[in-house]
Picture 1 (cartoon, helix red, strand yellow):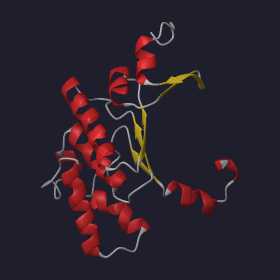
Picture 2 (cartoon, rainbow, N blue to C red):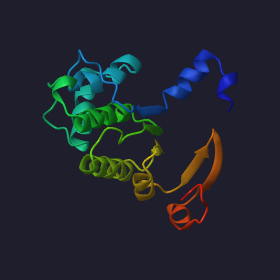
Picture 3 (spheres, rainbow, N blue to C red):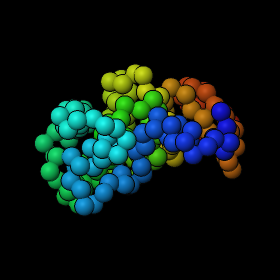
Length: 173
């Protein structure tokens, strides 16, 4: 369907199928980790507090942030904020997760950890389609099933990681 032709109501229904992991986590500074992850459930569902608590704690454990519920974003490292952002993106059980430059600003060790977290998240949630937008080709080649390369706003290549690894095309190299 063409999103530009949808009513606000139709578009809202489509948006609710997506979780987004923002480049810089986009956490609410005034809310602790627990409240940041619970926020989408409180805004878009009628779940009871016990169910919200169960989901939030489960997801924080899944992303390696168990025990951080009462910390503020300012008390977290960049990698930890990204993990909390991932938990928030997953909390409403979306069909799609969009990762916007998930390794930007991370050192090589944290970049590898984030790549592994994306892979582990996909394995733990096989019904979710993950879309990773990245300039980090090493990461893309290690985590992707399919790669679509854009140049000047147009798709110029698409294929498997092996296609991109072995290509002689100067644009890909």
